[in-house]
Image (cartoon, rainbow, N blue to C red; front, side):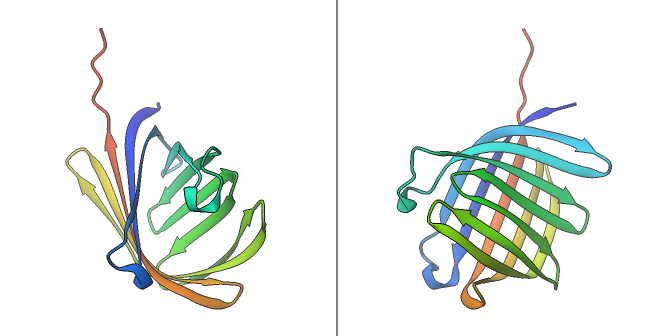
Length: 147
């Protein structure tokens, strides 16, 4: 069964501690085979010059792993596993980059209306350190009353 949810994703990079970015979207959540799947859409980053394009995103939440899959103007499949390096590719209309993620912290917590995930990781692009990042993902079930 699918449930409507509100997804808030707030990210901070170490190079811009006072400059966080937050995306809030509505989406659908379902559980299957012990995993949670959340699908939602978001606009591409305006700084990339693609602010009219839509990116379809999927969060796959396993007990000890989180995956973020994006398709559209920009495409990637990032995998976060505590104390592990994972490699993926980030594709844009301007080219493809190799992305290495070392997850330092992956914490999942239940909340009153859903759950929260905290990620802290080191990001490398094409083998060069880019930044240390923190991401907070909040998922809240939408309470809709049927008429």
